[in-house]
Amino acid sequence: MEYEQATHSDLDAIKDLLKSYGLPTGDFKHHLINFIVAKQSNEIIGVGGYEACKEYALLRSFAVKTSHKNLGVAEEIFNLVKEQAINSGVKGFYLLTDTAIKYFERFEFCECSRDNAPESIRKTKQFSGLCPDTATMMYKTLSA
Image (cartoon, rainbow, N blue to C red; front, side, top):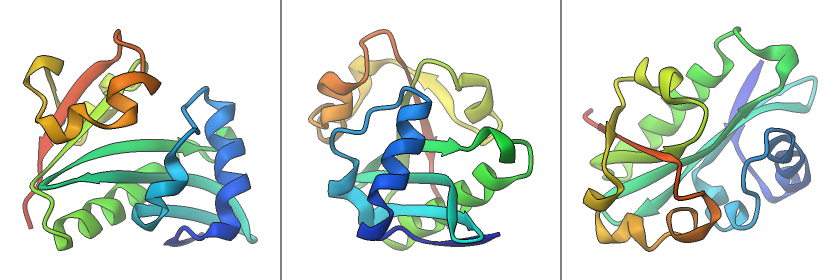
C-alpha cells in the first residue's frame, strides 16, 4: 500500500470512489492539495482530505473501497492528513457526517452544534449546501 499526495491525474478515480458512497464531488478538486490517496497496484483504494478555512479545516471526502475496509487504510490517511494540517497551522478539524459518527469518535471527535461553527467553516460549500442540514457536525482540536 502506498500513500501519497493526490494529483490531478487522480481526479476521476477519486470522484468515482466518493460517488460510490454518495459523498459530494462538486468541489473537492479545488482542495486537492490537502488530499491524500492510498494506492495499491496504482489503483486508488482510499482517499481523504480537508478544506483549509483559516485556522480551522473542514475534514471531508473520506472513503475506502469496500474490498479494503478494516485494514487501517482510513486511519493511515487520517493520520497523514492530520499531520499535514498541523504543519500548515490548522488548530482544529470540523466535519459533517450522516453515517460515520461512531467512526470519528474513535479519533476523539465530539459532536457540536452547527450554530457554533466558525464563520470560515460556515462559508464552505459543504456546510452551506452540499451536505444536508441533518448532517451531524463534529470537532477535534489538533495538536502537534
